[in-house]
Length: 160
Image (cartoon, rainbow, N blue to C red; front, top):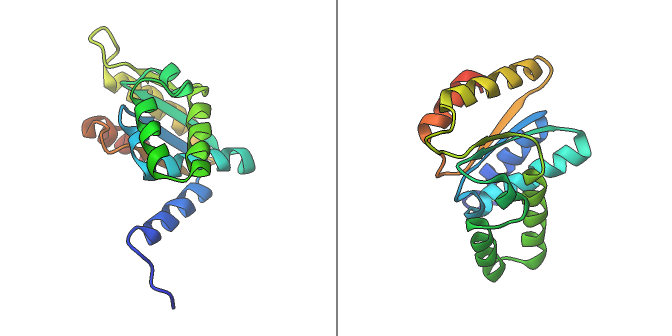
């Protein structure tokens, strides 16, 4: 039996979790695009959306959806860096998936003082997911820089 390298089993397990889940929640944060593993997950998620009709629910956490849609701001910098280190086709696939997610309807928490409390966002998300949950499994994709408090409350509320 061939020995696998670090991350290979985890990557396979994540791909399998994405494939068997019908609802996929993506928390897009400022540094999300800097992670090649997050972008690989996102690419898998969008593939499943197209091929299997998975429901994709984006949460724009302290980022502007137009920056995701147009790959602007910090996301452009991240993709520019990936282009110097990764295969052109791989980065192109990531960019296409990333831009597509920016076009999806989701929740936008801009983090400003005038913005709603995170708990209200979480409640809205949980209600939406619970309405769909009776028929589907859920997968949650989030960047390492996502506020732990927000993520923990969301996971608790959704029950993933």
